[in-house]
Image (cartoon, rainbow, N blue to C red; front, side, top):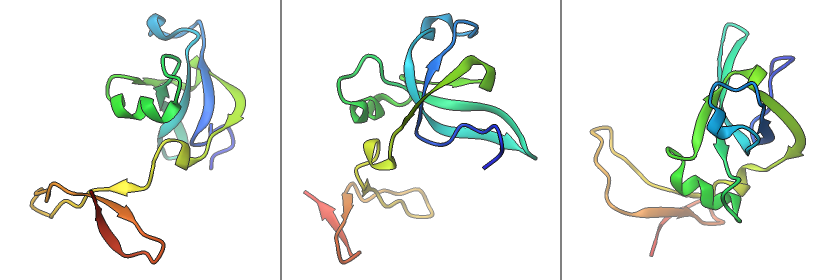
Length: 116
């Protein structure tokens, strides 16, 4: 991790100096980091102010996330865990891009079994 990098799943508040004024003051969490050659360009933040359950916000990730440069975010000090956002379910897609229509869940023995 770079010196000034905000870590994954850190809670942030969108500052007033944002170019996306509709998000001013909203809380969210860092879900992606845009970095190249030691320079951080920004962060993809899932905004969850409108949800009682933060995991629920992941269902609308495309609508409820936005990219912000570092100077537009303030870290609150709250750290979430990966499991707060991801439940462990996954899908399998072939190299040709085909999906079998099943959602899989990791079992304790690490075998794959479809979720009903």
